[in-house]
Image 1: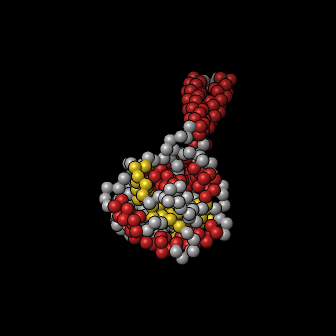
Image 2: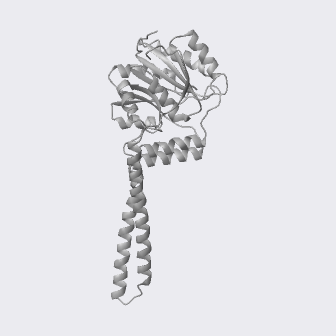
Image 3: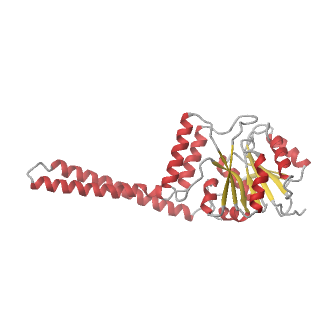
Length: 313
C-alpha cells in the first residue's frame, strides 16, 4: 500500500494518557480539517502501563490518518518525542502534548504562518504556574542559557509548534543523542515566529513531569546549547593566573618595603595551583565537546511496533 505525503504531520508523544488520547485526537482533527491541508497524526508511546496503546490501536483501525509507534521501553521525554518527529513525513511537522496543555486551537494559525513562508512557528506560554522551587530553577536555567549559551533560547517555549521539513531534516542530520529540540530549533537559524498563549489547566489525568524530569530538561538545554560552559573552568584558570601574578607583585612590594612576604608567596603558589587545575579541566571539557560532536551515533529509541504506517512511509 502506497501513501501520499501529507502536508502536515502532528506528532503527539504519550505515556499513560488513556484519558486524553481519544479526546486530543478528535480536537486535533477538528482544528486541522478547517485548514484545508492534508494531515496525519502520529502517536508515539513511551511504555504506557494503562490502556493508552489499546485505545490508539482502535483509533488507527477507524481512521487511516492516525498512526502509532510503540517504543520497547521508556526512552525519556526528549528522545521519544524527537524520534516521532523524525518518523513523520509531512511537509511540515507539529509537535504537541497529549494533555491539552498545548492548545489545539493554535494549529490553524501555525499552518497559516507556515503557508506564508515561516519555517518555525512556536507557541509561547504567557505564564508558568509552578511552585517556588521549580520557578527558581526555571529562572536560573533561562539566565544561564542566556549568558552561557551559544544562541538565545526562547523562555516559555516548550517546543509546541510547527517546523518545516527543511528544519526537521537539518536537526535530524545533527544526530544528537539527547536532543533538546526546542534549543535545536533556534540553533538552526531558520525564520522563526512566536504566538503567545495562556497555558490551560491539564484536562485529565496526572502529569508525567516531576522535579527531576524538569531538572533533566534544564541540564540538557544548558549542556546541549553551550560550548562556552565547558570552557568556563578554563576562563576561571586564566583569572586565577592573573590573581597569582597580582599576589606576586604584592609580595615584591612587601619585600622592598621590609614587610613579611611569606603570606604573599604562599597565597600566590596556592592560587597558581588552582589556576592550573581549572585550566586543565577547561581543556578536558573542550576535548570532550569535540569528541561528542564527532560521535553522535546513538539511536534515539528502539521501536517495538508500528501501527497504520503504509509502505514507503
